[in-house]
Length: 364
Image (cartoon, rainbow, N blue to C red; front, top):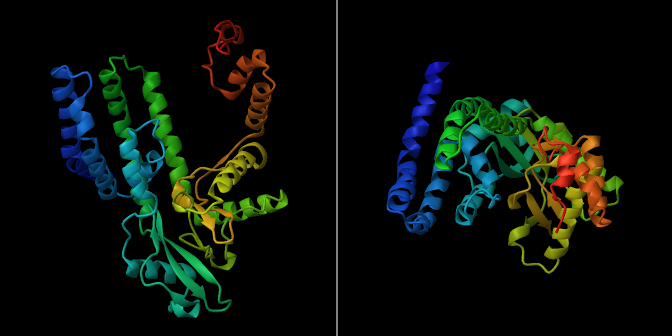
């Protein structure tokens, strides 16, 4: 549908024009052309630009909100002031209309009156994210407090369109970025950038599958119980009320880990590290959305990990390679580390073991 694609590209261009022009003026005119090696204007305007970036993400829609959430914890890619501003997207995304949400609930749950299932259901969402929003309610039959997650109408179509547009624009962005850094752009550069968009897109699309999210949540909870890791948990899924666009879980009382002032927060940070290492090296299913909005300290002092829509399967060979790498580091067996880099895919395919060994990569 070329008209839809063109319309979306024009929309993106119109919304980002002022921001991009200001950024380019600060960098090129006031920085490069005036030979300001410290880029004073660029740095001075960062606080305002960061606020503009937050508003832009919200205006551009779910795909860019999700991208902003991902970048909000990547201070290695963005200036810290941008990352801090974008963290507002972790649990404060503008919601869609609750009337629409209730229609989705009725259609997915197969009822004309939600009072048949819920004794209470909040009028407005208690939390809103890029793909859906959450209401608090009480089940009529069991009297359990629950979180009712409802997917945004038409979200999959919006994501598909934006991912297609991003794939079209990525080669241009790659060439511009390399030109700024005075580097030649190769086809491999473009292919790598596009593959990154594709991989991120696959994970994002997977988040729209609420049945998959329910399975991931249940499997994580079972895996932690089997391993006696009782300090970490996931919300209990109400399996009778799982649908393509609706996910109901038991309500978890707690506060975001990064905003909690309790004395045991440092211990729970250790619990989080232990849980993620267990996922990476043992269970083989890694939670891939660990921003602070998804990590809660429960009222009984546990760590609760939310939002299991985006996960990554860790193959056995990668787990073994990671374990060997960690073992070699711990035993100071540095001669084995070049082979570990090859096994982990850290080195380019055309670099031999002998070249890595002779490079002195493990010295110092």
